[in-house]
Image (cartoon, rainbow, N blue to C red; front, side, top):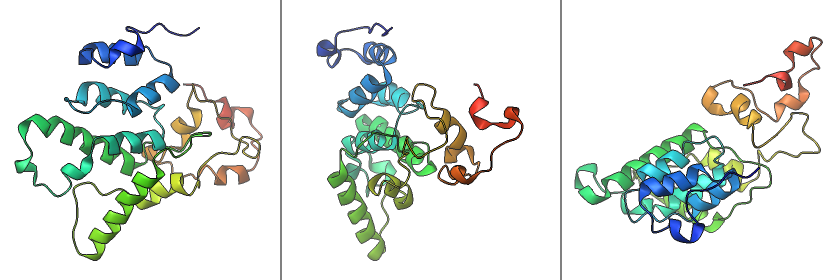
Length: 207
């Protein structure tokens, strides 16, 4: 049964951050991702964006869109001491998202397309130009991680994969996220021999 939300979607954009957060907490996962992709960064985003971007249901494509919506280019070459006080919260939020992106916290999910391919590619191209010129920005995305989205490397094929995937439980994310440092490629799991003991079956794990 769908959860009730605190405010109608039409009025939530002008609400206080506390009310926006209450609305976000009441959203389904799909609604929450859509809300965060459209969120206005003009104020201090840490309360609302900070909660949303820490959730396990956040996928890599949405995370990159939210990151770019924060206009990180504004701070990319600006010394920290020169960031205006009123924008400090935005810069810190971008720092947090960038760290999570590069840690592998956000994964590619089935049926999640790349909505901002052109913007992502422009960022990576600028990053490559900086590298050639010996310049380094504040926000450097790990190209190997971003490639899993752009090149569709980790998209799960529901018909071919033997592992069980269910979005609401996020089982694959909990088991195989690089953040947990298990060092197991979920593509390689297809070649894992059958377990004789049913208690050893990873799909029987419960959280």
